[in-house]
Image (cartoon, rainbow, N blue to C red; front, side):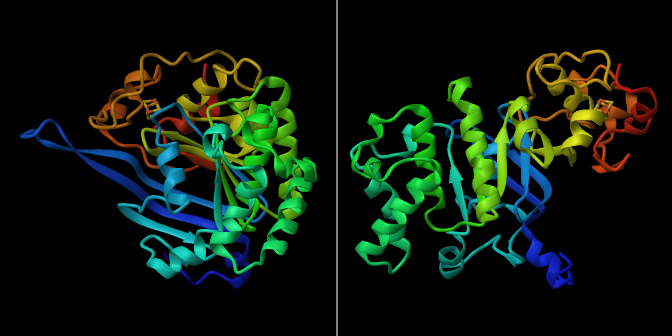
Length: 337
Ligand code: SF4
């Protein structure tokens, strides 16, 4: 990692990953052979202040493992993770203490992340109690302020999680994630468990909090309609690797990887006029324990040729964004039909 960046760039880039990887060694039975599962396999990403990076892909693509490394819940096997310019890939206890508040997480199921026996006021005050020297009265004041920021009232502090609707519970989960003034929020499918009618409200709340608090979001989702609503840039993950990465417009109007194109085509509400034809995803994602040789997408790809079965395509710039496909230049000319 070249740390000769200007101080401006370091200030602006709140998160950077360099070749980040997480491997798990799995044993098949007591005397079985140890196999390596490469859940995340060499991911390069960066995120700027007050921007939203969406990470999309099917279940099993490595999205949640990546989220757990970024939130310092799991340590990477290889590569580096930088938060505000500091390498936190292998943090000691004091670095962990310093950076845990910096990056917080919102989960898919807000009910599961809120202890049903505690009142909302106590649930929101808990991170302050553990991580700050604030007095009881100061903690109470911060709880009331935060409830207001997420559209709830002071009296809600005295109620229990089961007394709220799904949308309100997700507001409470957002409030809890923000109690320690994080710079980055990793949101793992934050609206997929909500009714369609309240999704837009929660997304709008996240957008206004981002503006107000200069938050950076990593937004993990399989739902491209939601991603189109909230993201500035999009990284498409397949079997632990990024296969396409660009701005929202580059991905939604000019995707060059057949996998991205198939994801877009499978989301009918996403209007994608520049791409005629539909690629239907065939079969299942292969096991990360035994990924196919060459391009790991080749068994499902209608454009696969001989080279695809033998050579791993590099992630490289094509038409202004990053694509990992041997035939990306051809698709710039012909489109994906
Ligand atoms: Fe399809 Fe080949 Fe491109 Fe992989 S490299 S996405 S198999 S065309």
